[in-house]
Image (cartoon, rainbow, N blue to C red):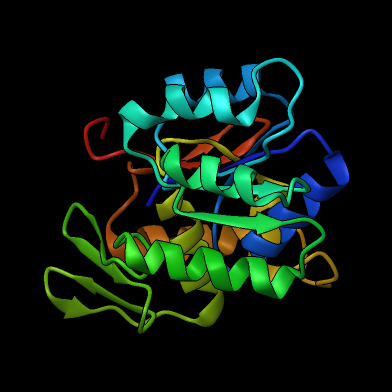
Length: 221
């Protein structure tokens, strides 16, 4: 799975969306204007783009023309609630249109529904000889089940969904154990060591000095 791109020029709203989705297991990238969003879209792939209409620089409707060739699903998130705006967004190719202010639970339900509809949510991940099934939280290596503690599984899924990207230690710790956890600073290293041993990923799951850890993409390993 690839990250979700959040494009919104209101930092507080962008942060709320990101926290809501991260708590549900999604990986997110945030852009605060259309120009930065276009740069992200050019450099990497996304499973979904949450797109504000009113943006500094390139607005959301104009950005749709840039997104369309990539085939990436788009959901508009905007304060513009006129019928003609909603129709314009849907005709431009957006899958859905949610009006601000919105409840975090509604946003998550719509994102989950769209991801299932497009075949992105719950899809089995295949990494070398390891399969990860998010729907039943199951891991297999060469077809044989691999026992995982809840934290080991959450760490594995976080790394797998961001493979090819170096993740900071504090980001990994917060996503897996939570910001209020009293787990010790070596907890992450111990869990990474266990994953390497269980999955045979001694060279595939790399420590990045002064940053954290990176799980290689299959073509890079």
